[in-house]
Structure formats: C-alpha cells, structure tokens
Amino acid sequence: MGWFFNTWSDIVRVLVLGIAGYIALIFFLRVSGKRTLSKLNAFDFVITVALGSTFGSFILSKDISLSEGLTGLAVLIWLQHMISWLTVRSDFIKGVIRGEPTLVYYNGEYLKDAMKRSRVVESEIEQSVRNEGHANLEDVGAVILETDGSFSIIGRSEKEGKELNIAGLKV
Image 1 (tube, one colour):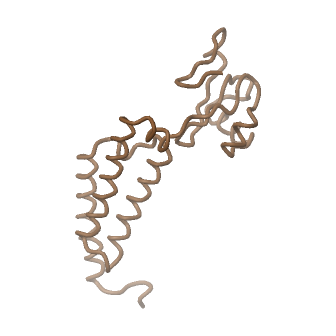
Image 2 (spheres, rainbow, N blue to C red):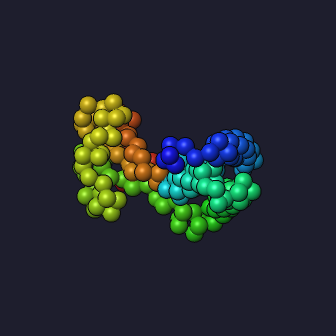
C-alpha cells in the first residue's frame, strides 16, 4: 500500500510545503534579480538545476523542514548573486565562470581543432544550421558555439564584403 498512498498528512505536508516553498522561491528570485535564472553559461544552468533539486527535495523529504529547504534555496540564490557580482568586477572570475565562445565553422570550412576541443561533431553543426532555417551550409558564413552550449548561426549575407568580427571573435 505504501507505493501508492501513505497517509493524508503526507499529502497535506507536500501541499503546504509546495505552496509555501513556491511563494518563497518566487520572492527570492524577484529580490535577487533577473540574472539568477539566466541561461548565459553552464554555471547558470547548474544553479538552475540545483534550485530545482533543492526545491523538490524539501517538498518530498520528511527529513527536511520548510525552514531548512528555504535556507538551502536562499544560499544557492545568494551564491549565484555573489558569483555574478564578482564576474562583473573581475576578468579572472569571468574567465573561470563564463569561458569563451568558440568558432567551429567559418567560410565553408569546419574548424576541426576547435570542434575537437569543444567536443562537437559535424552533424551537430549541421543540425543547428537546419534549426535556424538554412537548407545547407552554403547559406552560412559562421557557426559559433556559445558559452551556454547553444550555436549561433551567422548567415553569409550578413557578412559579405566584410571581415568577420563578432563580439570578441575575430577570424
């Protein structure tokens, strides 16, 4: 019987903790600002997953109280806030946390060394090009692997007659 239902008090506990935790999480996120849940880099993704995991844990675990769960959420949000504050003020921290975008395809050629370092294969680049609505690579001037793991596609028409200079990348 325990697989499908234990007690009504367990259900009420999940409802109360879920609602209270949700309200507190929304408050914490509004106070901490938009940057807390941004998806600019891998670190941001890890924090978002950790927030979700912490929230789920304290809602479902009988061993974690509401105050402990909210403290866990507050610590993660505070750490994210501090790291982003430091990133804006220190080039060293920015380099450690954010990394750099990587040019993986340029002017009709796959950049094999960059692809190998980034663990990207040709089919992933081709898929990203199709996802952006290009029928083939002939329409594309450059593909950049961004710090958040997404690909940016620069069409040929956007760069014709100019040297490629994309926000920190120069070929």
